[in-house]
Image (cartoon, rainbow, N blue to C red):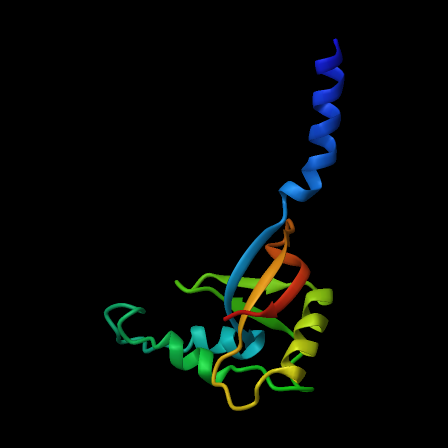
Amino acid sequence: MRITVILPAILCLASPMGFAESWTGDLVDAVCYQGGESNTSPFAASIYVSHDRDLVIRQCRPRPNKTKRFTVVEKYGQTIQLDPAGNSKAADLVRNADKKSRYIHVAVTGEKTNDDRVRVDSISLAR
C-alpha cells in the first residue's frame, strides 16, 4: 500500500527534472543561417558535395545589438531554435563574447517544446 502511494509521488516530483536536456554547438544568426543553408547549386549531384556548412557558420556569426533570433548548430548540422527568452539570453552572451573569435561555441540547457524550439534554462560559452 505504501509503495503504491510513495512511488507515484516520487515520479511526479522528479518528472520536471527528467525533461531537461543539453546541447552544444555554434551560435549563429537564425535568419542568416537559414538563407545560407538553402543557398546551394541546383546543378550539384548532392547538396552535401557543394555545401560548406563551416563557411555558413562563420558568415552567420551573430552580431552584438543586431541579431535578434539565434540558432545553435550542432556538430552534424542539426539545428536548435531558441525561444524568445533564450534569444535574449543569447544576445547578452554575444555582447560579452570574444570579438576576435570566428565561432561562438555554446552549451544550452533546456526543454524542447511542441513547436521544435527549446525553452532555454541556461546558455553559456562552451570550451
